[in-house]
Structures are given as C-alpha cells and as structure tokens.
Length: 291
Image (cartoon, rainbow, N blue to C red):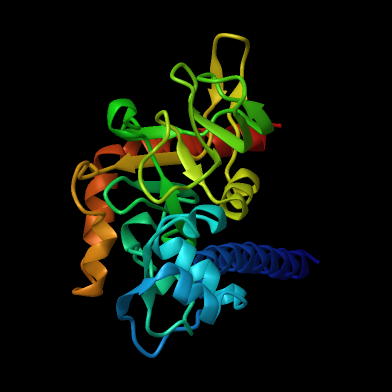
C-alpha cells in the first residue's frame, strides 16, 4: 500500500501546484490585461484649426451636439460662455474623439503601476485622468486667476459633496465638488468656464466632467477628526499660465501640435512624487484587504 500512497501524494501535490500555478498565471494575466486594455477611439482624418466668428459658426453648427462639445473644450469654455466670445477656434475635422484635440498623451508607460491619477495643466487649461497609464478622461478647466493662483504640486483627493457652498462667497453653489487641499479649500467642481483662469484658486470643470471625476476618484479614509488613515486619488497640478498674454490655445491655428504634452512631460512632472504615490496606493490596498 505504501507505494500507492506515495503515488497518490505525488498526484495530489502535482494537482495543487498546478492549481496554484494556474491561479497565479490567471492573476498575472488579469493584471496584464488591466494595464494593456485598449480603449476604442475614433481618430480624425486631420487635426487642424481655424478662427471663426462665433455667431456665424453657431448658425452653421449650433444644432450639432458633437461639434458643440468639441468647440467648448477647445476654447476652454462652456455653452453659456461660448456664446459671449467674439471669435472661437474650431477644428476643420470634427470626426475624432476629444482626446485628439486636447494635449495630454493617450498613454504614459511610466504610470503603468499607478492605478489612478489626475493631472491639471495650468498652461493648457486642461485636465486628464489615467488608469495604469491609459488616458480615461480629459477635458477643459479654468483654474485660479492671477491674484488667486491654484497651488501646484502633488495633492490627494479627500472629501467630496454633490453640492456645497464656496468658502469665498456663500452665494456660490459648487456642484460635484471634490476637495484636494483641505486647509486652503481648493478642489475641482462644476462652475462657469469663461475661457481663461478665473477662479479663486479652485479647478473649474464642465458639469459632465466634474460628475465623472466625482464618481471615479476616491475619498480619503479618516482615522479620527485629526488624522488621515488613507489618502484619496493623487492629483498633480503643474505649470504656469501666461497671464496678460494671448490665450495659449490660439497657437493651434498656426501649429496644431503647439500645446501637445508628451509622455516625457508627464513623466517629468510625476517622477518627484512617484514614490509617495505608490506608497499611498499600497496603504489603501492594505487597508482594504484588512477590512
């Protein structure tokens, strides 16, 4: 009987090892798929721009919601404020997805280990959200005006509220607000986009974008009233706006790639903070596993 027991033991061990190996392989495969998942995007035939008289352009294209949304984003504005502009920049080809008209790169290899991160570019007045290096969301923003500049650097989302009141003026209602700097009261939220930095240091967004980030980003977890147990989603605000000069996106008429941000640009802005970001990400995973 002993030889049979040995054989059975070997078979059982082999099966168990095979299962573990299969599970590990499956885990690695899922992780790989998560990182390399491709998002289907529609690329325009060409990306070039021209100036148009706003009223004349609205007469031609004012009933096309796709063209309107792209035009709002390219001019860093919203529906109400777009109408107030004398002239606007519009693409000659509207057939592509928004990512091809805004400056952030579609992929950033240096972010493959970062599960979620948001960037706000001061000079281009745009934001981008990435998952494992893949661009998920992008759109326009209007950041802090010259005397109330938005602070730059690394932040983490903390508390959020579907609607709250501004700390600067209690008559200002902020929808889909997600705070990133608790003491200074800085956050991103829906509010009017006049087409230039105009806020009291906050990061203004179109409502659809604010709502997406509100649902997508993660809140902090507090240990008590004074201590943070787990930080939220990392947010990097970078660059400087050329106050007093021509709007940066006007360069697109002469150079369609004049505002383009490269992978190396994003890597450069991220590198000084990467260890902190990964450390906080690991802490969140540990806390979630312990619950």
